[in-house]
Structures are given as structure tokens and as C-alpha cells.
Amino acid sequence: MMAPVDPPVGSFLKCFVCVSDEGRTWTELIQGFTKESDKVEKNLAHLQTLLEKAHVKPSVICRGCNMQRYCSLSHLVADRQEHKPLCEVLRDLQKSMKIDHPLKLLGQITDRRKLQLVISQLKMVLLAKLGRPLNQREHQLIGNPAVCDVCFSTEALEDCEGCAGVAFCSAAHQRLVRGYHTPEDCQTLALIATPFRQLNCLVNIKDFYRSCPLKESNLIKAFTEATDIRISDTPWTDLESYQLFATCSSFSGIASLCLALSHISWVPDPNKAVIVYVAGATEDTLRYFEDMHLRFLFLQYPSIRNLELHFIGRTVGRIDQVDIKFSDRSFEQTVVKCFYPLSFSQYSCILNVDPTLILIMQPDFFGVGKVTQRISRYMKRKVPLENEWKPCLSSVIRSFGVPICYTSISRAQAISDFAAITLSAEKSKIAIERAYNIMGNPYREILPLHNPAPEDTERIVYANNYLEVIFTSKKKCQ
Ligand SMILES: [Zn+2]
Ligand SMILES: [Zn+2]
Ligand SMILES: [Zn+2]
Ligand SMILES: [Zn+2]
Image (tube, rainbow, N blue to C red):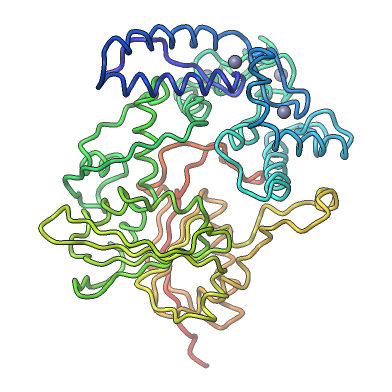
């Protein structure tokens, strides 16, 4: 158990260097509990100082990007090297657009929709200019920016003492939200704003025990049953609880796959490999398929002896095949992971498409997040991730008779994704059969996110919240 220290309160207003120091000390503290106890005492004292220091308002704001906050100049300097690439892109953007804050990219922010629109455009600019996906802390800085929850001002902010997940420019504006900033909201926002979100801190679980009936369960129940690990109700209060919570959340991908498998008529044959194509895979998708996740799948499906995972996506970096063997039970279960840095349409031109299932995690088939003209002129080159789904989708739906499972982050996104499929199918005279779909997927991630889609009304969303399985077939001639 953790010793009683004050929980770390947020947030996006906090000094990044202090946050990572805090994370490191928490980690050492957790490890210390199983090792020498005098080290624990020392770390505990150190942590208390760090926490007290973190309550000091981070008054220094980086003058390059106008977004990153620090407690002191020395911490700004200490972070410079790591912060620099993102900072320079934002600095150049402000200069060229003649604005004094990145969030003013589309003019003054007047409502939440506009805020989300600016966020998605900033992410796209950064993606194109940096030529790589944003890391955890950059996502948190851009996706969860410090603005007044009422008027969207970026000046003179104080955060909510309960969650540190929202900030206000004045006491008057803080009073305005009392009615709807409920304790429940406060907890969800605490989980969004916790500085632990900036740390990459999954636990590698090695021991798995019991399976559970997937159709009647949910992610936390199935995870606890499988690992004997209990998940905290207040995971933002200490790193150990948060790590386990985030780890449980990462089982969303594999558990959703298991749920999809339980809804298709499919006869497990120990002599035949189960082949899953993960189409449109990115580095982000791969984090759902670590060894511990695969063990979870084998636990639910002991009849699967050989699993082949084909990761197909233009940004998948690796190429080498990975072979993994598990002998948790009296028999051996093997996994082959193959990586193809190709789009699905390229892949299907070269290789024979005959999997057990095609899995697509949060595709955004329509490419809703388009960049406006003005910004694309600023970028002077094409966004690398312009909608690659158009040709791919028509190849995906040509895999007749193969179950296709996709997930979406929100109701609006799910509607848009299905509309894209229908449209593509109509053009190619292909019939769609909806085998299974569920809103509020019990195996969605449990870490909340601000809704990245500006047009959508849901403020908080969860990855893989919507899940659908479809089959396609050639339309009969009339
Ligand atoms: Zn600091
Ligand atoms: Zn900066
Ligand atoms: Zn305000
Ligand atoms: Zn709050």
C-alpha cells in the first residue's frame, strides 16, 4: 500500500519538469517498497517537498510557444532540449499567422467547438512539421490546453482545487460553473488532467489466472478476473493506482477483439492459425498488442493455439517478423506478428487476403479532421496523413465473407464511419450485413479523453467506445 502523502493535484497548469520529477520519485517509491526501507523514507520526504513545490503557481510561461508552463527559469532551461522541437513549430506558426498565442489560430475562441477545432488543427500542423506522431506530453499540452472554462481566456488562470482539470480566469467565472461542475465531472476531469497522463507508465503483467464470460462482463471485471489486480476508484491519487488503471485501459484493444470473435460464428480449430489483419495500424495501435495482451486473448480462447497478427499501415515502422511462444498452460500457444508498412489497398494488391477477421481501430474513414486552406498554405506541403482510407476502404469491403470489425471513439464518429462504408459499398455494388454493433462497448478504454472532434456535442469520450462487426457480399444482379 502507498504511504499517506497528499495526492498530486493536476495539471496542465503545472511545471513539466516538476511533474516528471514527481513521476520519477513515485516510481522509485513504488519500487522502494519492495526493496530497502530507508530509501523509502528518503523518497517519501523528497516527494512531499516536490508536491509542496508543485502547489506553487507555475508563473513562468515559455516565450516561444506561449503554452508550456514552468515553476522557475531553471526548470525552463532544464526542459529546453526536449521541448524545443514542438516549441519552434508553434513559434513559427504564431509569427507567420501574426498571432500572439497558438490557440488564436482561427481568431478569438468563442465556444468549445471552436476550441476543439483549433486543437485538431494544431495537432495536424505539428504532425506535418515534426514528421512524427506527438508524444504523451505534447498531446497533453495541445489537447488539454490551459484556458478559462467559461470565457476561453488564456490569462491569469487558477485551476479547480478538486480536479485541476479545469481552470478559470476569475473567481466570478469559477462561480458560474458550480451548477454543472458536479463531483462526478470533477473526478473525470481529474483523470484527464492528472500529470501521470504525461508519463509512459504501463505495468508489464506476467501472471494470468481466470477467463470470464466476455458477453456479460466489462473491461475492469475481466481484467481483475484475469490478473487478480484490483483497480482503484481514484486512480489519479497515486502513481501506482494510476499505472494499474492505465494498464487495464490498454487491454481495451485485445478485449474488443475477443468480444468481436465471440460474436462471429467461427469454429476454433487447434490445427489452424487464427489470422487477424489489423488494417490501418499505427504505432499507437501496436501498444494494444504487447505480450500481456496476447496472454489475455489466449486465456479467453484456450482453443486458439496459433495466432497470426498482420499489422498493415503506412506508418508502421518495423518490418521484421516477431515470433512469440507462451507455455502458460500444459500446451504451447504461439503468435506470429508481421508488419507491413503499406496501405491496405497496396497490401491487397500484392498478397492474398484471407484472414479470420479484419480489425480496424478507430479509423476515421471520412477523414473528418480536414485542414483549412489557410493553414495548408502555411504548411506549404501536403499533410502526410490525408485521408488514406478512401482507396483502402474499397479494398477492405471486397474481402467478401470475412468479418470486419471496427471501433469508433464517439457516436458521431461511428455514424460517420458507417456512412463511409455504406457509400463505398454502394459505389461498388456490395451488400453490407451488420452482424453486431454496440454503443458503450464494455471493453472501451477507461481513461477519458476530451472529444477531439470539434463538431461533436459529447465533451468527454473513451477510445473504442463504439464497436461494430460487418460482413460484405457481392450484390446479386437484379
Ligand atoms: Zn518546476
Ligand atoms: Zn515553448
Ligand atoms: Zn473566464
Ligand atoms: Zn473540479
